[in-house]
Image (tube, rainbow, N blue to C red; front, side, top):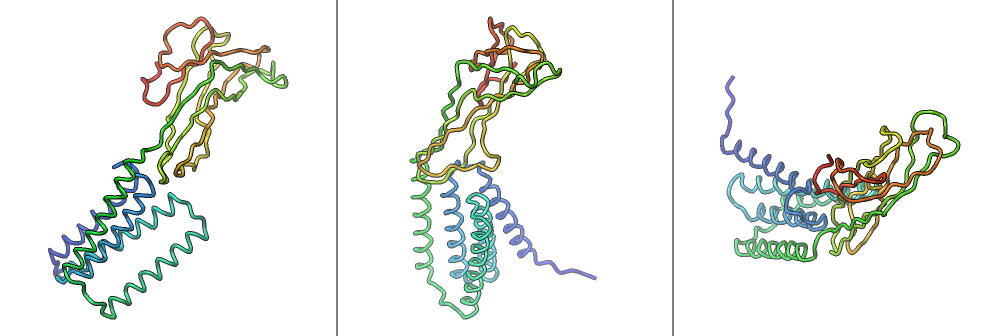
Length: 279
């Protein structure tokens, strides 16, 4: 049994697949450093542009390719909006229902034979969409991205709770040791990615097995910051203290990455994302 494969259609199909992969890579927030709002808008404008191109094209198969690319772009747009804007169950349902109605309506219009725009009209429409896209990208670039300001305390005092003293082993004790303030000066929703922090205990210690672990305290699913918004997050240190310790201990806090230098007092050396790795 022989299979007849149209080489041209095969190449078109591969082009659509690669376009879908490019769109998925685009929305991963790893290229172009665009805001979430502008990325969503560009996807929607891309859908409209490709649909207009599909209506205007008169060559065999190319119109189908344009419609396929348009549909893929819209699917990525809807998925991106649902993931990044978290509209909730009702909002997601309404978005999907509206999308279904949109495509049924577009399909009916095509089957009914909507007038084919002239090349000049199609070019003007695509040019207008391109201008809108350029304005959005320019406004996004000029408005600036999210900035982070890290402040740490000069010291922190911790102790083992009386009810856990003398029981043997190690007791976790949490204290706030600083703050990270995220500011989004632009009017667009942007991705939130506070700098990571790490630490080590240095200086004289009664028990060398005591340790501290630091992290920025925020909800696990909080990954966006609304436009024109400033928000602060606590830097929390979780200390692993020997339960045989009966008194308080004060740790100095310094931002640095060298854990090999001798300190004269118990010290937490904190590394902020971008500094050299802790020794």
